[in-house]
Amino acid sequence: MTTMTETSARFREFKMPDVGEGLTEAEILKWFVQPGDTVTDGQVVCEVETAKAAVELPIPFDGVVHELRFPEGTTVDVGQVIIAIDVAPGSGDAPAAAPAQEPAAEPEAEAEPKGRTPVLVGYGVAESSTKRRPRKGASATPEAAAVAAAVQAELNGHAAPAAPAAPAAAVPAQGGRPLAKPPVRKLAKDLGIDLATVVPTGKDGIITREDVHAAAAPAAAPAAAPAPAPAAVAPAVAEAPAVVSDSARETRIPVKGVRKAIAQAMVGSAFTAPHVTEFITVDVTRTMKLVAELKEDKDMAGVRVNPLLVIAKALLVAIKRNPEVNAAWDEANQEIVQKHYVNLGIAAATPRGLIVPNIKDAHDKTLPQLAAALGELVTTARDGKTSPAAMAGGTVTITNVGVFGVDTGTPILNSGESAILAVGAIKLQPWVHKGKVKPRQVTTLALSFDHRLVDGELGSKVLADVAAILEQPKRLITWA
Image 1 (spheres, rainbow, N blue to C red):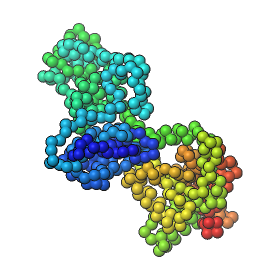
Image 2 (cartoon, rainbow, N blue to C red; image 1 turned 180 degrees about the vertical axis):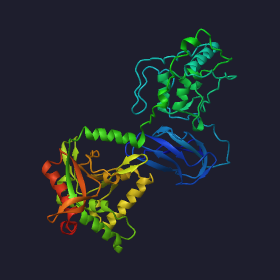
Image 3 (tube, helix red, strand yellow; image 1 turned 135 degrees about the vertical axis):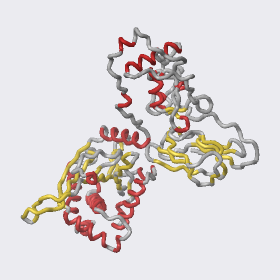
């Protein structure tokens, strides 16, 4: 998709690109430039979050930033212009700034026109021309509003607030439309609140959920004059209990970007692939000794060495011995697709949610190369710099729940993959070793697999091979 347009010989526009395969929208997380800043070809101007990852966007030409079309926190459709660049500053008058400050596809706070089609993923538009339910008391006189404020104050057990000289005016967005995210617009619509009357407190004049709740509260209704409570009303409600706002007892977090994609993928996988999970508990004392020795090996200097490295190598060897496990199900053609390569996924917990980048062609890597790839993958994920390409094309995955002190679990397959290995915590436990009970390092492994691709015999062989290697790591030499 073309990501830039020319409005004139002087001004060029940069559109939101499709930074992942088939993505339709992205949220602007942070702008790194402001109007008036000089930019150069390849300079990163903003960071956006897609359904797969956070991605930095570079500008493809030199110039001076003329206009940012959307504020931070706005979800923008692919193909919409997000920034205008003056590529010939000082050569003439600048065109008028575009009024659009939010995606045109966002639902309006006013009544929906009949026949309008759905415009956001996950948001449908009713076919009828149903109008917004008016907020109770919205058309009341200032005197009535003042009485309402006094009554609510009595309900809450305190005196009525002093009336302001004039109601505070909302700060509209450029072009006359208030700035608000789609979930906030929906909340306002459900509560019967006109966003044009709401005073924004968010950054850059964005209306927040709290602003909408404040506007919906009767106690916040503006009064033009002091509001004495009628004597006949106050005694009747003086003993009423205090009302606790639901907003103070709950926190609602919009699900979007990476978290939304994870939720959809997990539901799709759980209800598409028939999962089977098998477990095995294994003595990994010798593996832990090998890890300690590798840390001192000069060939492993400068790379991350830990039990996960040996476990990853053990899984790769098990797949080599049982290649049928490395496959995918082609629903359209009703075929099993055997993979002759292994893109090894490693589940990583990040502030934006769980992501699963993978090591491309992990089956061809030596132990030092695998260690370097693992270290780079983990560092990139923690920094939030994992690209969509790094998360595409996985074949099997490892999830290390042991780092949280968990013994094991029943992991859900990543969509399109055949198997996922969960590694539990490695603990010192009493274990029968050479006929005697001794303290040994023990862990539990769990292998989930797609039963359309992998039957019980094949899944058991793979899991048993991984366990055998971890119990006797020298098998890495004889089996590899």
